[in-house]
Length: 137
Image (cartoon, rainbow, N blue to C red; front, side, top):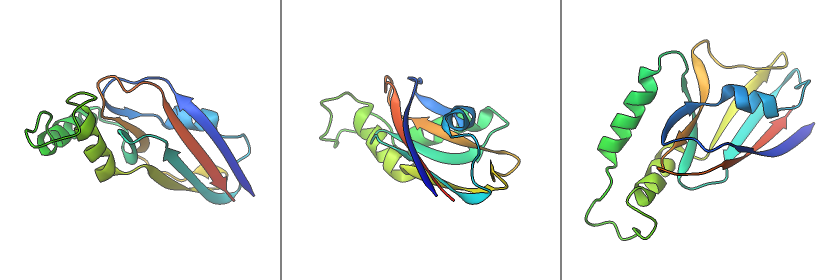
């Protein structure tokens, strides 16, 4: 069985956002007993990851660390026509990645107790983001 659905997330402000609930609402009822959810973001300035879903300080620390590692307004950047947040956003997205895979066990996402799915929005005004969810079971 292979099911695939493309959907859009509403615009989020710059930062790290737990979207587990939104993703689950987009998935079909009756997930397979065993399988994989593959989630792909169709953008080059945002990313997906799985991480801590309990303490909001984790999201703040992610933002601080990545802004320290990849700051805006670096004098040697050439791709600047879309604003000072654009090229750093592409670099951050490349570092984190455009897709995640999560096992499905007993018809549920088999995430750890403290894990959630994150949208990592690196643009100041990124807009709605398109995702493709593929369920293989």
